[in-house]
Image: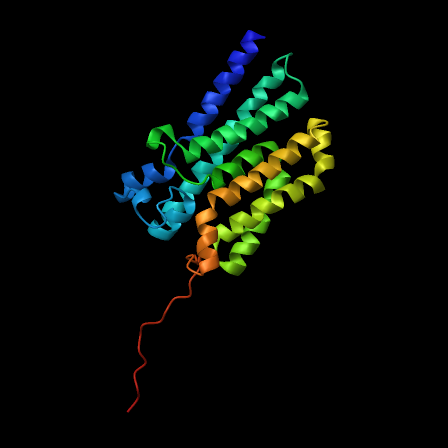
Length: 230
């Protein structure tokens, strides 16, 4: 049993270190000579990278943050080979790994504990547990974003929709992990609250009408003036 605890602690440390990889900070400094935490919303995440440095900088940041969340949770599956870990405990460990990874992103040891909000990392981590729910949440996020052009609003609504999808897909969760509905429901509610809390300043700006909109595809302006024929 001591070996079991040692393995769990090791995997949690790995999850935190993966979450602490400050992709936005490293990419901004290495390729653009910019500390993203000193510009825009001062948030080391995909949205601020998109706002300040554009799509070319934001896409790799999203991919890296997504993958580190997915990997941090997926490696917890190694504990299924431990006879002391039941299926219920396995999913509980994966849920705990989600929070450890997101905390690592928000408070990264490799970037002086000043990171981002952890949305992309959270999406990747949830995908590592239940891909179909993550896909539906992403669909909600994309729909709200395309209509409103507010990334923060899309993230908040998608997060609040998470417990709803957990309830809807409780059957598939049961077939995959056993009787873990209580853990999943509590987990989804905490995630929703966490997303609202991390976006509290965005909520204030949304209410005040000062939140910045982001347009992925902007129509090109034609700067050529038409010549008048004589």
